[in-house]
Image (cartoon, rainbow, N blue to C red; front, top):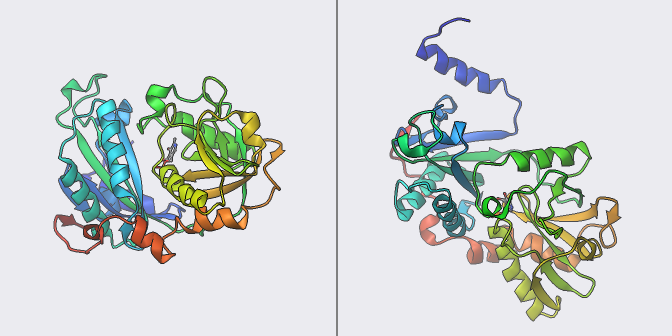
Length: 336
Ligand SMILES: Cc1ncc(COP(=O)(O)O)c(C=O)c1O
C-alpha cells in the first residue's frame, strides 16, 4: 500500500473515470459542503462520514431535463421536501433557494437533454448511528447526460421475489434502494426489463423505479393507489392525460384502487410509468401475454407516450415549468 499526496489523488480520481465505459456523462455537481458547483468529475464526491453514505440517512429525487426545461420540477420538489420531513432531515435552505440552486446547476452544465438528480442528507459529522452529531444537513445535485439511444419497444416484466419495502418506507424516496436494485437485477437475470412488486395483501404495487398502470378490456384506466408505494409525478401527469381521454370517449373511466394480479394480467394494455421510462408498454408479465402481445394501441401511444414528450409543442408549453425555469446559462459559484 502506498501513501499518495492529495494532488495525485485528484489526478487519479480523474483518470479512473476516463477508464470507465459508461453511457452517462456527469456535467455539473452542486454540493453544499463546498457551497458551489463544479464541472470537474474528480471533485464530484461526498464525504465518507456523511450519514447518507454509511447509514443510508438521506433522501433524493430527480427531474428530467427536456429541451432546456426541468420537467415537473415543482412536483418533484414537493415530494423531495416531503421525503426529507419523513426522514427527519432538517432542510438546510428554504424551498426557493433549493429550487434556484437546482436550476442553476443545470444552467452551468449547459445540458438541454438529460437528468438532474438531487439529495438531502443528514450530513457529515461522525460514524455514529444517530445524526445528532452531524454538522448540518447537506444538499447535493448532479446533472447527467445519458447517451443511450431511446427505446420504445414493448417489454417483458416478471413478479419480484424480493420483498417490497413496508409502506412507511415505500412512500418516501430515501436512498435505501437495495431492494429496488436487487429487484432490477432479478429482472435482468430473467431477461426482463423490471420486476413488479406485489403489496403485503397480494395486490399490484409498483416497479423498482416506476409505477404501473393498465387499460382494462372495458377501457378503464386502472392504477394502484399511492398509499403503500411511491406517488409518482409522471403517473399523476398520466392520470391528467387519461382524464382528457375520458372526455374524448376513448376511455370509459379512471379507477385508482387495489388492483389484483388476475385483473392486471387480463388487461388490454399494461404500462410502466416514471421519470426514467416516461411511459413504456409491457407486452408480457411472467408467462402471461398482455393484450395482443404487441406494443401499445395507437390511441394509447399517442396520448401516453407522445403527449409526455416535449417534442410535441403543446407538451412543452403545458407541462414544462414556469418561464423562470428556462435555463439561462449564467455563471456564478462555478469551479472547474
Ligand atoms: C419506487 C419508485 N416508484 C415509482 C417511481 C416513479 O416516480 P416518478 O414518476 O416521480 O419518477 C419511482 C421513480 O422515481 C420510484 O423509484
